[in-house]
Length: 172
Image (tube, rainbow, N blue to C red):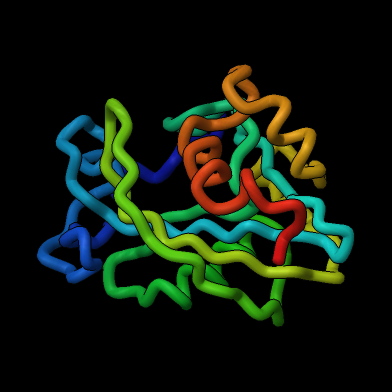
């Protein structure tokens, strides 16, 4: 069975994103609450539907749930923009998109604290989920709104959707 690389190195950052150290994935996800940066990309098609990925059962956080189109950790020594493009290419085969930065916030769960850097992009290229995922598909915003709180999505995605997209009728 596939697993996450527990020795992968992540930067430890301040809430403003300044690197103050480094730690392994295992340390960051151990409950120590070391703040580490991640990138989230919300991918839309021209009809305003949002693409969501299905997290595989082997993931150490929220297995089997629907989640942000692209989400991943920033590696130690990597810039946020480079991490965003790397993750989009690795997870969905997307390249050449024009990301729009929406904002950042601190997300805390029982096992970790993340500095989430949120982006959105519209693409004409059909996403091609990699073997890192259990697939993915486009959802209308109404379908997402109707399923919030039902255990379908990751708590992080639900919080982010409500913050950035719930009141919008489209992706603009």
